[in-house]
Length: 199
Ligand SMILES: [Zn+2]
Image (cartoon, rainbow, N blue to C red):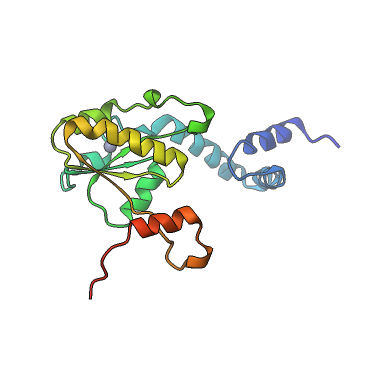
């Protein structure tokens, strides 16, 4: 049976989203058709608005609708601490920890395995911040995978001429995890990142 073409098209569009498979796409499309029309329009309009009004901050790369973003404008932030992340979603997670430094978001939309050139990352605003002399420590909060490893070394090299201390998040065992089930790399990193136990 062939579906109505606009319905088929909606399913195809939804299929482009991550974690959405054919069955979910079909269920969502049929759900959208059953919604009150104004609600369906609100979803469509929200996608258009977000695409038109949200863009990376010219200073830190975080997705924002004001440039510079609220964090870059916040004078209460510690200018000496600059945390580098891959995505805006990482900043949202780090903000929940109470971190009060500033950020630089790489907006990395590639995998190094696919042959991306590191020189194509837009790092000029990061270099400007390192060169400003205000940053004393660059905290690399990159994902603990191959790309994160390569990027960490690359960024540490980049910071070297500016005498900025470069640190990275400790990798280790997840809270609630079992040592016996941890993989070798996680366990080795956890050992390397060991610290004193305060009495
Ligand atoms: Zn910003």
